[in-house]
Structures are given as structure tokens and as C-alpha cells.
Length: 94
Image 1 (cartoon, rainbow, N blue to C red):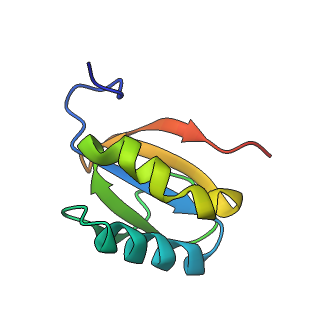
Image 2: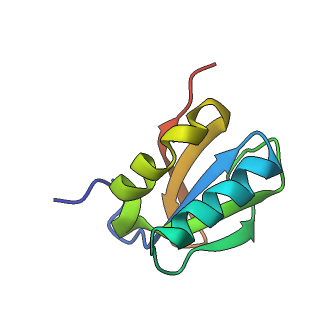
């Protein structure tokens, strides 16, 4: 069982309202040992207040959600995709 709707999803990206939180999330992910964590420009299908997002393996989605608990107030959304197409997995309220 996969947490994600699209079968070809390889990556997840988390978007935040502020660049500070994106950088913080990247640091947290890397320190936790998540693989292939990278800062990338926000994909065109993804809406975000800030132009950069943090990418991680979709296999690590649950772990990523846990790690982002402290940044929850600033989280905009989490998307799953391949790099070309992105589906929203989680959308913050408000």
C-alpha cells in the first residue's frame, strides 16, 4: 500500500509560506538521514508563496510529515510527483 495516488510518483515536495521554513525543513530532513533531499524551484503546477521548495523521496512521506511537525504552522502543502506532474497530497487549512 502506497500513501500516494499516482503510481509513478517518485518525489514529494513540501511548500512553505517562508523561505526560512523551506531551509529549515531541508536541514531537518538531511539531519534525519532522508535521501535525495534537495532544494528545488517550485514546480509550475504547484502554488506557493515562496519560489523554492524542498524535495524528498515519496517513500519517506510519513517520516517527512513527522519531521515537519514543528514547521506545521508555516506549511502550505505537500505534493507528490515525478518532476513533470504533481498531485497534492496534503493542503494546509487557511
